[in-house]
Amino acid sequence: MNELVLVLDFGGQYKELIARTVRGLSVYSEIRPGNTVVDEIKNLKPIGIIMTGGPNSVYLPNSFKCDPGIFKLGIPILGICYGMQLMCQIFGGDVRPCKKGEFGRVKASLKTDSVLFAGIHEKNTVLMSHTDFVSKLPDGFVSIAATADCPHAACESSSQKFYGVQFHPEVEHTDGGRKMIEHFLYDVCGAKGDYRLDDYIDTQVRQIRQKVGYQKVLLALSGGVDSSVCAGLLTKAIPGQVTCIFVDHGFMRKNEGDEIERVFSSRKLNFIRVNAQRRFLSKIKGVTDPERKRKIIGDEFARVFEEEAGKLGSIPFMVQGTIYPDVIESGGKLGSTIKSHHNVGGLPENLAFAEVIEPLSGLFKDEVRILGKKLGLPASLTERQPFPGPGLAIRIMGEVTQEKLEVVRMADFIMCEEMGKLKRKPQQYFAVYTGTCSVGVKGDDRTYDAVIALRAVTTSDFMTGEYTPLSHKVLSRIASRITSEISSVSRVVYDITSKPPATVEWE
Image 1: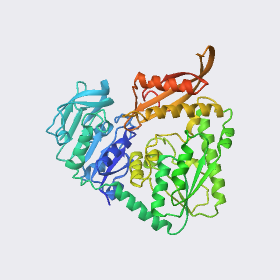
Image 2: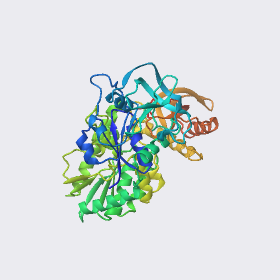
Image 3: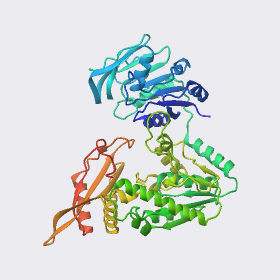
Image 4: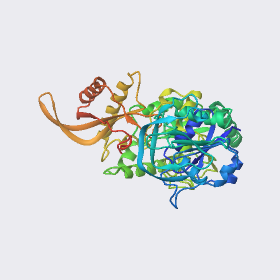
């Protein structure tokens, strides 16, 4: 059993990043709602607790609260942003609105004699995002950091092992932030660092074998990272007992369906590819709203999978590539649901399976990628860029047609091919069919053809992102190839909007 650090969530946008940072430091972490009762926390036996940020003001009557009993458990606690304010309020401190909020990278002065900041520069840059602040610390707490507008940018009660930071150490914009969390884990909580992904593989293989025995399992294989790694894990655990159904909806990138088939048809499983391109395209004919596109494609995927599963007879187990963020986003006791936890592709719950197995449900996306490498999957699958379930259908603005699909597929292929030549690549890059046309000239003829947008994003967590400043030489080469090799494109533009305010995808 691994040591556990509990992340109590108060609606913070960086909760997953906190938990993943902890795991990256070899300590197992789980996210639970901020109001988890103290008896439940006791049963989990965490070695430390981290309280996240949140969108509310702690002094409002309907704001999220924690069970005050957690402070009597003798467990070290680190409060971040809202978490710090809530801790200080519970102990009798004063929290009030700022005269001037702080947003973005801010200069801070740290007291490096605090265990939290040992070995970190006294003059530091941190990421702030708050409109409230702790105006008066509770008795027993001392200030260990300050900015020009925030006198208590961090505080501690070292005798009780309680620490608070108004800024966000979990993001890369805070210099030395990872080191601060490491100090909390190892120097305050006394962590041993016993979390390893190799152990996760061994545990899951053992559990799958115990549960399944010699019976068959069915996996819906999308070709994405999660389902691909799931297939790799299953073939290690129960070779010859796995059937994968790959529904090719026709919205994949160039050669992607063939690559998926090539990789998995050679493994010890029964691989079934369903070519349903015409069926899906006919279902979204005339549809322009992106949410309707998503829903129709998800529903149709469910229907196709259901039909194919029915042909196989009785298979007791279905396996899903659900990962930990899917479980978190299903909503907890606090706040609203971000994304309902559902069967793969929106599969109907009444499918005839005795049990659903989710062997990746404890992992974050980057952990899944590492797991895939350890299982011997090729980099073309484990390093596959994030790709929406509806595929190229939502990288085409407006109605989707076969002609538009061919254009954006080829434009995307050209961009990916050129980006593949770079030594340092963005985390995500693709082409978009904008749905607009522009006047051009090819030879001696006037043209009025499609405009393609290019998108490239640099990010460490895919929650925020900066557009990648590609060189004009690279952009020029991509644009030249697209307009030369695709006759129906007259213009190429580059999206230089970061996230936020934009999202990574256009739809």
